[in-house]
Amino acid sequence: MVRGRPKGDEPTCVLAVRVPIALREELDRYLDALETRIGFKASRNAIIRHALRQFLEAEPHQGPPRLPPHVDEL
Image 1 (cartoon, rainbow, N blue to C red):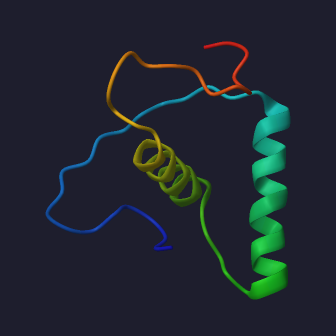
Image 2: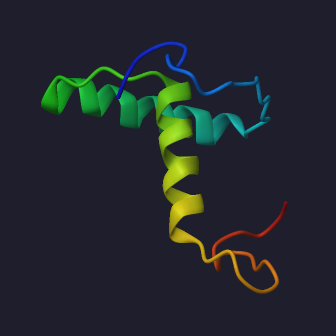
């Protein structure tokens, strides 16, 4: 994953998201483990962009939207 602002012709915007502190801490532990185990350094933003892209590509875009089974609130 590339660090920093995505480069390229695709326009970008800032999307502010509020997350629980416990979730941010879990993300930081994951990032530390990536760097420690395989030497891969990534930012929170890069991992969140990647996860969002993977989620949207995996979700079917037909019919009414549905919540994944593990989402309790919006």
